[in-house]
Length: 295
Image (cartoon, rainbow, N blue to C red):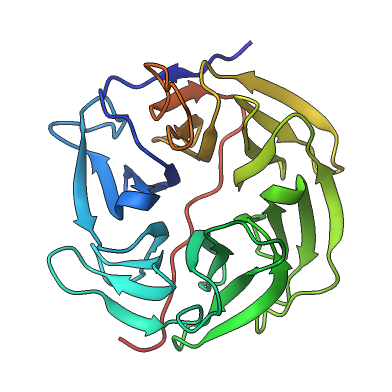
């Protein structure tokens, strides 16, 4: 059985998520500290053996990023209570603040770009209020639209290769739903239950080249792979309690990277908060970029 092993870096993240393989390197976020991180030093394979170096640090939580096409070194980010463009060394360029006037304390959580160049990200209440979260879609013109509501803790989303299908986890409800996506405008069709996760909560997700969905399972110390028909096909176990984000990357797309978390643990172990990796048989899809129509 494939085993997940910790990378050489000694770093331990409070809430490691948003892990991506982009532009030939690994990046991830530590949500509550607002940091965007990448392996430091001479690391030509991008395998994370070096310590993690901050690319950027915000004074608000940083949920997830995606690269911006045509702007090397710039990311679109789900951060604080909104969406911004993030270029290290400069102030964030805020596109929208959809949760800034919410009646309770909110923050952005996980997110990603789809193959059509749109950026999707979810929001949640700090106190976990049921149904307080939403899923937002950022179009190529920078307009941010609420695509779904009544979500408690949104994670993902993840898209298939042509962007016609979106998977979204509502972690607090232990549920992954699947939605058809209109390629013209990103409109979502009627969602259906894809998988009900037991023994933990579905968290970060990605889709591989066979159309199978990988998800980190918070609280179970596992990564699970579901076939397109919803059948559970693979379970990888970690020596930690809280795997949170994952991606498939490396030069051939066959390295699975998993971020984990220490937050909320009364007595974190030595590996809680570490980044793990494993070799898998089926490669992942390329990381999609946000493609703005205005510079």
